[in-house]
Length: 380
Image (cartoon, rainbow, N blue to C red; front, side):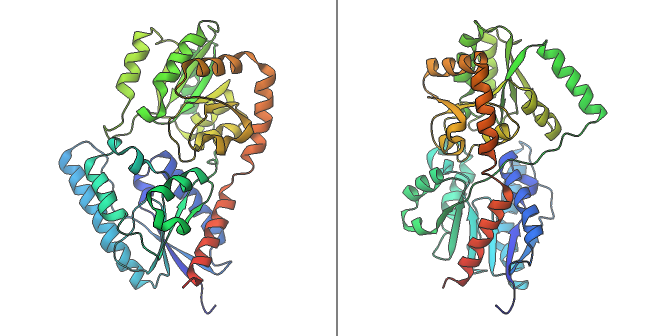
């Protein structure tokens, strides 16, 4: 090979990405930094120079969408042309329509655009079908986070079955950073606990996360286990579609569970690590997940996991979690009661979970993706 394969990476998602997609891009870039030019691949980073509008103003949203389209469809191809890029890598579903560079790799984190269109802003939904899907061609590879997503995406994109490859994600690396602000937060949090134990959920408050059903199940289980609370860390996405926060709060009020189900909002990495390390167990009742990153994060921190038995969750959790139907209130209640009461099972799941988490690493993911780049480059 006369020179390194030049792979350009779109970094705009570092400014816009939500928790999972942001972790994905940041973690891979750290791996690519260490791999740069070692195995015949040179990584170039295309940094987005502007701030990203995240407000609710309609005009602001329209302007942001225009800037995003110009970035994807004009700036990225020009950069790739000037810098003699061989492969463009985008981690946010969208690629340029122009064949510059000829070969592109894109990440589809899930199939929600196809399966839950009602949860998306109509503009983004139209953009997905008119631009993102139109940009896919024989010179495109699609990376997905699980075999479940691969199987589902093959249904919606049957002509691209051979161009879809599953590469597992991994937990975000977090170090517990002691600080005065963290100590204040910890004291306030422990005061709310009132020495109770707690079940943890981390993530957005979308309807898709099925938190209302889990709260109802917890309400029943908690009657026999009054010394346990349910902590929900996270908040709603800024878009209104699929936002389940208001109805969740209404349910908690109606059940008179305001002191037992605590919505603590978004947390820092250090606060998140503290929650993982001090919870009794983790609950993940989601109706649809492309991977389920919190499962691996919880397991890595020795936290027993109970999860819905659907979509990608059993594939990722394996035998290191207990599962329930997200549509069956009794099964959820039984799972909650079982993990609260069964010390031996929690210890068993802790050990299994920590071993399971070792199967997932960003170093492994980065090397697999680099192999995809190399094989794709030599394919004519």
